Length: 284
Image 1 (spheres, rainbow, N blue to C red):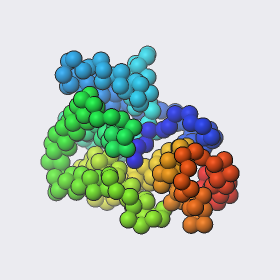
Image 2: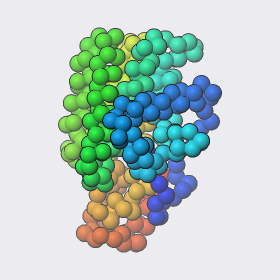
Image 3: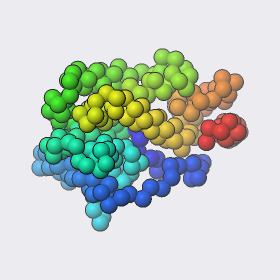
Image 4: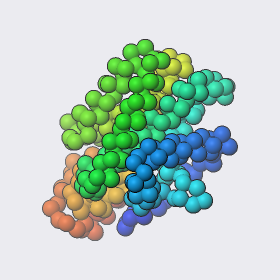
């Protein structure tokens, strides 16, 4: 479910990645503002956990600390910059009130932080320690409190927030109902539902449903692209653990048995067959 790009993994093709983006000065400043939300989050924790929380981000999420703490550097820029561009969609003019912009940054920063944290807690990559559970509960509280205040400015906003959160919990611990790429994509749309809330609320506030609908569609398409890229880079370990990732659902049924073989190690010919099929099919 996460959208943080992977570390270097064996057999990954480094040429398959998103293109490099040069941030505008305004966008770079906005990323700094998003990172300040993370620092405010850490300060909201009990003082005795501040250092451990920062170290956790540095070690587990590879967050750089020098020359400045930059949690969102590890995200493809549309993940966080979407709310910056929505704010300024009208010829660059700032449309939201400063308070609404601050609530949007808080809620979206927490949503993006919770995506990989929830994923790793759910699949066992992270143990349920006191620190990890504290980070999860405090991030959720801050996100939900900001969303409640942000939703006030949108007709039926509270119901929209509840609907997205319900979709998230309905999907987070279950496989796709339909074992196809379309089925997986529909399922993943629900899994990234908390990340859709702020862009949709802001777009509705800025210009109504006619603006919000394409924003939601575009941001979801970006999210599924991130998920496919991540699944491609982690294809070898996913095959080794027989995890049915997004790439599995891209394959023709005839190749599923190459993935499903009950082995704790990836058999090189199987991996090569699947990789060749992905490249010949124009999927990567």
